[in-house]
Length: 214
Image (cartoon, rainbow, N blue to C red; front, side, top):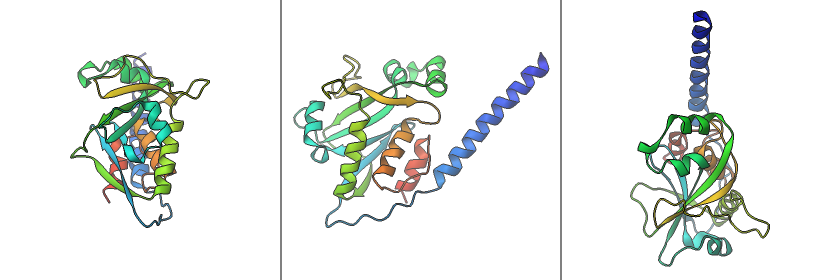
């Protein structure tokens, strides 16, 4: 029994080390999209809370029909989109609320997902600005919109009463969250599809920010 536990512990340790090494290597390796040329660049933003990345678009750059579905209040100038594990989002409004079973389920069990939409009236000081062409903005709009689960009438499915405050909402999302496809992988994928230089694969926020800062 002791020998079994020993080898099980070693096996788990090796899996974790392998995961972290692959995350480091693939986070550092950059994608190499062809440069986009346009007469006038626009700015989108990426932000992190220290663990979780979100994509932020100026309201004016969001497809009007999509913006109407989001019921954006007057005066809002920026809208942030974060994708993640539904249970983690709804049960962990603050890091102090995090429970081990919630984290384990989010990382190792394929689970339902949600999109966190937050309205901002002015830009945050720590937001990372990214200059893009209109075609890249259109691709990012398409990626974000297709991440929302919709009903038979193509309407977004809001999770009623799930927001943390007056300026945010949660919606049902498509896809499953695991340790191989995290909230940060979602942002990374959106940047890839929009031909913005980023990581090959990055489950952590630092990998994406590393390339945006270069």
